[in-house]
Every structure is written in C-alpha cells, then in structure tokens.
Image (cartoon, rainbow, N blue to C red):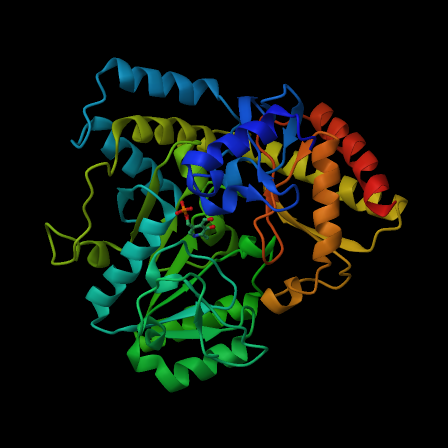
Length: 434
Ligand SMILES: Cc1ncc(COP(=O)(O)O)c(C=O)c1O
C-alpha cells in the first residue's frame, strides 16, 4: 500500500498511542506489514479509509457469519438499547438465548455466558479440574485455545508424544506446562498411549473438533472415536473448543456434524453475531459445580451484557432458521472449487480444504493436510505474496503469522459476489505467479 494512503498514515498515527498500533496483536496483517483500517462494512464487503472496497474473506476472524451490519442483529441491539440495557443484571433474553443454545448444540444441558473465547476455554479447564479433582489435561499439537496462561504453549511433537513445551508468549507463569500432555492431531495410536500413561491423572482433553486454526483440518473418524472412548474410560472430560467451529457448518456445530458429543464445549465468535459474547456449557452435573450451586467460580461484571445477548439471540435464531445452511453449502460449493480451478489455470500447486463457511489454502501442498506438521509444509512466502496481491485487487484475507491461516465467507455473500471474488483472485494469482 502506498505511503500516502490514509490507511498507512492512520496506522502510523495509532502507533503513537496504541501499543503496536493495534488493539489485538494478531491484527497486524503480516502480508502487508500493517493493520488494515476499515471505515465501513456492509454484508460481505468492507471499505478501507481510502474508500477502496474489498470482499471480506477474513470475516472478522470468524465472528461475522451473517454479514456485516445484519439488519436482524441491528434491530435486536437497538431494542436492547431502547430498554436502557440494564448491565450486569439478568433479564428474560438470557434464558431465551440459553434455551436456543441448549436446543441446538447436542452436549448442552446448561450454559454460561462470558466475554471472549479465551475466557470460555479458561473456565472449561477450571471446571474440569474442579469436577474430576485432577490436574493434567491433553491438548493437541497446534490447536489454538486463546490467550490465557494455561494454553499459551506450543512444542512440535514431530510425530511423537509430549515434547518439551515452550510458552508462546513472554510472561507466562512458570511450571504450568507440567500439567499438559500434548499429542499430535489425528493420531489415535499416540492418543491411546497418552491415556495408558497418564489416564488417571487427566482432568480433560481439549481439542478443536474441526481444526480450523490451521486452515481447515478434519478429524478422522478413528481419531474421534478413540478420543471419545479413551476419555470416557479414564473419567476424563472431553472439551470441544468450538469457538471457531460453532455454527460454521450447522446449527449444532462440529459435534453435531461429527456425531460425537463432548462433556463440555465452548462457543465463540459467530455465536455473538459480530458482538462480543462467548459461551461454555455441557452436562448438567458438571455445570452444576459452578457457584452458586457448586464450588467453582465463574463471574464477571460484563458477562451476558444485554446488548451482546440480544445480538446473539438474533444471530442464533437466524442460524437455526430453515435454509440458512443450504445457502452456506451452495456458496462453498462454488467458491472452493472456483479457487481450485484458478490454481489449475495458473499452474499453482496447492490445496483448498474447507467445511461450511471456513477454509484453508495451502500453497505447495498436494496431499490432504491432516495435522499441524502437514500444515507447516505450506509455502508461506507464496501465501504472503498471494494475500498481498489479493488485497491489492480487492479481496481481504488476513495473515496471522505462523502456521497456515483460516479464511471464511459470510451468509450475505451471493453467487454474483462469488463470481466477482473469483475474477479478482484470477488477477491476484496472475500477480502472485509473476
Ligand atoms: C478455537 C479457538 N479457541 C479460542 C479462541 C480465543 O477466542 P477469543 O479471541 O475470543 O479470545 C480462538 C480465537 O481465535 C479460537 O479460534
């Protein structure tokens, strides 16, 4: 982007007072070297400060599934504001939203509302420890569960079990990694082994049931069956972190799609209809360990803010309405093959893996990407060139840094929009190859 662009100028200005020029570290788009500053959004499009328009294939990192400025969400928010939005109190719509969620997502008997996906995974892990009286938990290599200290670790298993984990941020409390057993994704044999060694010490196994944080990786049926069987046998709680996968491919999330019911799950991003609300919940007897019925703490002044609850209620009702996922499937059925066709046309080696409204692009990879190690094989330099070219031609993708990225579309996208996106990506791929 040119230095006289308003986006770049205002990003530089922000850096004077906002640490790193951003409110969230990963908001810097590494493909262009600055954050993107948008002035306006409508449906599947966003406009930057210079007035340039983009089809949004980041979709607020997954929070926008209906579309920007959705009229149903807006009406719900306005009606909550009209009532004075009594903050930090319960109201009728809290129970209404809870009921919609419990009717929609298989594992949910009871839910709690919280602010972010990070809080939701933090509370699930605390609750699992309270319920089982155990300390350790299993996580899967590369899966992402937010920013609290318990989950801020990585370590490449290189096909093995439980490497020495390293914090992925400075300042993480020492000693926490002792409680983590890390296993490669989609490896049922090593998962069995982990349960043989540590099963009686494991409070939880937390996983992304569809591993979208490395693009889009589906769990094998054998891996899922082993995970459910081993957790049940060991008395370990299975937690599906559905912050990104919830509502992406169906109203019951990945657990409904995969027909595997966890003990607890998180919902985030799309659940709030582009407003900040996350959810955790699960089996009644586990959730009843929360105060005031039980002894495990979950509180917060802004939990279940009425504006966010109203937005989420409008969003969830729309996801549950007839026809919503037919449209998602129809868009996916033209967008994903359309990108693959463009790869062929431009002789680009690469894969598109998608499910529902989210997908990953892996340059330089031909075989199915099944885990973190596979995803790491993608040609990152080429991906950065592609994203920069796509942005130049009016399609917004975000690069988070690190592993392969996840991209997505929203329900406001029409087939006419898909055709326009593909036209722009045609130009972008020609430039990437040049
Ligand atoms: C699977 C998963 N869990 C947790 C989180 C953290 O959510 P939040 O950014 O709302 O704190 C994310 C965010 O990307 C996520 O993808």
